[in-house]
Image: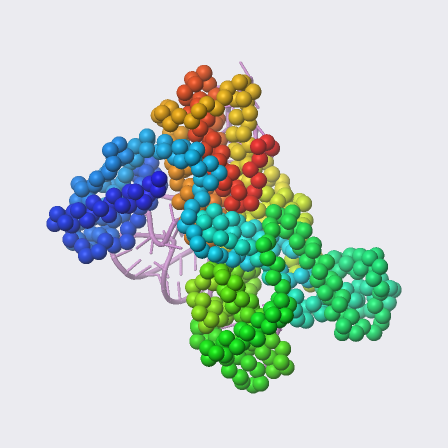
Length: 555
RNA sequence: GCGCCUGUAGCUCAGCUGGAUAGAGCAACGGACUACGAAUCCGUAGGUCGGAGGUUCGAAUCCUCUCGGGCGCGCCA
């Protein structure tokens, strides 16, 4: 029942009629907006068409508005009032009865209310987290995880076919460094006086790993490590750490469809194929003994090396191959979520995507870093230094739902301050509980009704005319607007819009609940309210579902 | 030095890509439980949207300059 679209069509048709009647002169209808009015005095919806059309029509906006209004052909009973306001806005006041339809709509669709077919037939991959398996996930990864997962849910709700993917960067010398780190910890355990390398991973988890390694019956390495040994140790450590990462993500409510290993790119010779493709297209050249990609042809600052003079391919080469592979796997769109510390890398990958013919199909979302505080004091977050707060600790301390909700109340491109003490101490005033409480409270209402022997009777739209309170209409309008909000959030790849909506809906509900009793002797009114708040419950659950936050029946 | 992100109430953040009188949550202050869950509600106070120009009917939003914060600028990953 897209109200905005309905109004938009009415307006456009009216303008056309005015032109046909010689009342308005214009070539093509300019882009105009139909927006929800901010203030009640401005009605429900407003359009700026008269303002944007005035110049072309060479008449004052208010006269243009009048010409449009004169020819408006709205269905009987839909509009309560239409007026011209301010510089030339046309305000539409929708009749109360019109809003009742949304309850029927929610009743008909159930948990699917809010879903749409916007992305039908579009296959999209969301790649996120993709942290190197050299240490446990930290809070920054948590933000990326919450965002990626919510985004995937959002795209899925809007009809896209979605796959979640985690890219495991397990080639290159960091595995060697990892092996070296483990080696030195093992030597330490053996009582050898060794100096831990400065470039090693210094976190305590490496010590634990070393102990577990021995406890599992593996032989301690000798004093003269071979390159093979280090690599083997590195692989071992990587596997263990990756298992830990999976486990943490699982507890954070995030699961992936595919764990894609960089090693696989080489096993399948995809990197060479990537080179071949770029060469075929004429975007590769040799210079200074290295192989270069002409990134500058696609807007990057400089050309980029894909194979070094020593013959080794670069990380970028892997990524080119990886993304070529992604598109060949049939994804129409690919969304990559990276930490903002990699933002300088985006132009070259975009360049590669363009070179390969996938212009506009790759979107890179940069999620700004999380500055972590504990009671206002900054907490160091370097992986190498070892003193950092892990995602695990955050989950244990503040809880999955609260953490996810906090991450998802911020735009990705804004830095986020996360104070562990606040997130946890706040618990009773935390927005996440506010929203969850609204859901649980409604569940409780239905439990209470059942306990009193009051049943939710057969669905009967005729009773909705009893819903006349300002609170009830405000809620109806919010519910009616929800599906469009989901689409807008998906289009912009911004789950935080859902978060804010939910907080507002919960506020409306709490206020309504406090002022008016749902269960009363008035059977018709009670039933009408049941169906109304049942709709609220459904939408709260839907929105929380997108965020990956529980919608509890009790708290 | 160059590039990207950012600056909105005391604090943490929204502001639907240019709309009408800039919002919410904390924190502060004052009220509301013998009623469906007080993890709630009602009210008060709090702002030159970092600053200066410009674009136009109209700017927190777009452009230029400027100041402050974050990040990045390898034949590393």
